[in-house]
Image (cartoon, rainbow, N blue to C red; front, side):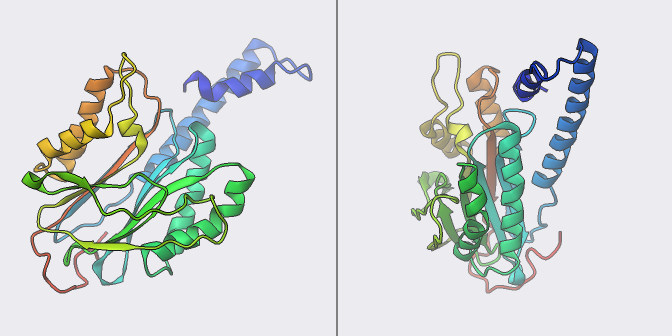
Length: 288
């Protein structure tokens, strides 16, 4: 565990109300290390759970925290009729506080998705569930939520202040999907969220990401930048989702020259299948 997580404990240990000896402090730090590593294990299990087995298209997700545990979040939720609800989010802050809010966000997403019929309804319910807690903690969460049917390739989405995903269309280049802006979760009470819908074409790739990717810095203080990400996706957009995921991670590591990571890095990648004009069959995402 890095010193960042332990600094508040050390400061507390030096309080005039009690000064434990060095052996007591060492025991405390060992206990905290074990508990933080357990928290990391739990978080990674929640983030990297089962992905749907698709008959058409492909998807993957990955999150790399800047500290042992982080505040970025992504998830996949199966819907009736074969669609998949996809979410990516970024909690303000880093480390343990952000990780705790991430767990709350995950619970709100899964609870909302059990009844909400669309991404906009999902974000509206999440904001209602989280607003009071986020306001009390002076925090917020940016979230992008989408329903994707891998058989029909219909892609419906809503945005709560999050970075807009990129659409990779092979030789035709890379662009943002049509904008749909909404207030971040915790920003306003009673907020509702509108939706957009597009139909993906065969082999289109949608790249969801958090700002830790484009804000990664090298030794000269330069950021990886959105433009570098676009160029990378244009060059390697024909790769499968797992290859492209690793290509992005390797490119960031090469760019930063192995400097310590300052922010969590998270991405979700989907690639459309070839049967985008078929009617919904309800079979494409049924197995988990």
